[in-house]
Length: 146
Image (cartoon, rainbow, N blue to C red; front, side, top):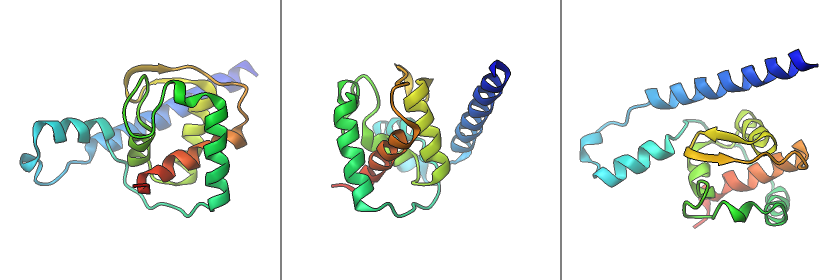
């Protein structure tokens, strides 16, 4: 069991490393036309290319409620950085796809660090995988909210 958990952690870290390397390889054309603040923001977001899947409204509504009850707003805000990244910044980085839904759901449950600079996200082992995935769907949907 311990070997399985260690292998699982290694696979997740390799996946995250590969995603980050892919994001770092993406170079924006006409980068010289961006202001210094825009360049910093672009580097902070590091958008991962991909098409978004449709998520039913009832799933998004449930995710919003789960986030409110889980205390996520203690460290995250919708549209500005707090202790952790803004939910809209997370939504700008990741496309709505099962692989990123599962990756972020595991981060909610297990905790994480390094993806958004220095903040450390505490683990939330009391949240089920299904609920964490629903929460992630809501967060990723915020890219389109005005």
